[in-house]
Length: 75
Image (cartoon, rainbow, N blue to C red):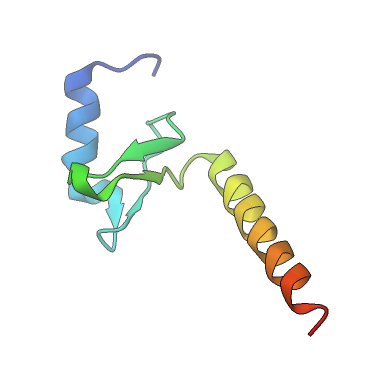
């Protein structure tokens, strides 16, 4: 589905079947990588049905792992 309407995006965002454990968004129809959480005060999350989300998580964990390694290697 290309360029879904704002109404469709809102329905996807509020539908609990796309939220696993209330925290993880998983919707194969939605092509967005980053998705706003239902409560706008909580920011955004990854769409875990999107293949690139796992790559981004791997990069983030690798970066912080490298930082921890560099800080603790001389101690």
